[in-house]
Amino acid sequence: MRRREFIAGLGTAAAWPLAARAQPAERVRRIGVLRSVDENDFDDRAGLAAFTQVLADLGWTEDRNLRIDIRWAAGSVDRVRAYAKELVDLQPDVIFADTTPVIAALQSVTRTIPIVFLGVSDPIGAGFVASVARPGGNITGFAFLEPSMGGKWLELLTEIAPGVKRVAAMFNPDTAPYVRPYFLPSFETGVWSLKLEPIVAPVRSDAEIEATITSLGRELGGGLVVMPDVFMIVHRASIISAAARNNVPAVYYYSYFARDGGLLSYGPNLLDVFRRAATYVDRVLRGAKPAELPVQLPTKFEMAVNLKTAKAIGLTIPESFLLRADEVIE
Image (cartoon, rainbow, N blue to C red; front, top):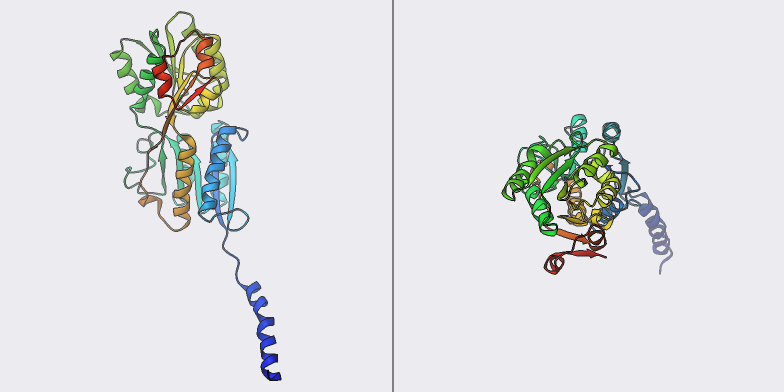
């Protein structure tokens, strides 16, 4: 090889790593996450782990091209409002959040930052989207359940506890204002068709939860439908404990209520919804507009029965019912 060509080759080889080092780093995208529950909530953390795993599978990792800022409101309306403003001030590329009060707080401080939700019961009625097919604004996501579920929970409760004569629908009207117009009509229709006594039971504290369930347990035949509500999630230990002490059969909407000692649950597979929500966040990060991403409903449902709780309150669960359950806890 001629000396001149050799030196030229050395120059090219020396320049290559410098050029590689000089390439611009991949842009880091920012996701704001606002959760309505406590940061120590095991089931919510499991959902977020599923969410971040899907994002990683789609090419978004925190150590390379993603930053995630998480805030936990622990059921506090005041914290929800403060954290909503705090996250919006960070100007993230997209916000991932849950429940109607949280989305309402975010909507009050931004109409431009894309928001992907889960766990919202009535996004049209709440004014978050114009329609399911064409949301029309900066918000879209995964609605929680159809309004007919109010009747479905009642049906399952009376099947597992046929001695029920009066049933309370319990919720906090401050954190779940949608329950009355959205879920109660089908609940009340079911109550009348089954010739039961309906009780609407708004609660705002552990003391009111205790009083409501104690009242149901004073006479035989009391039953409880726990409505979708972040307050119910945060206070589920109090609800489950009071129901057990007062021998009140209760039905819930997430399977972790049954795993924590509740009698029966029926509702969406939460991990599946978290995973599907991650695909929407991915699409937004790649340029999709929330206005054009249709609101979706759950596609996977699960029923869980706690046999230990059933035995403790004197119920014998039919074998046919157990065979339909996705999870039987003993």
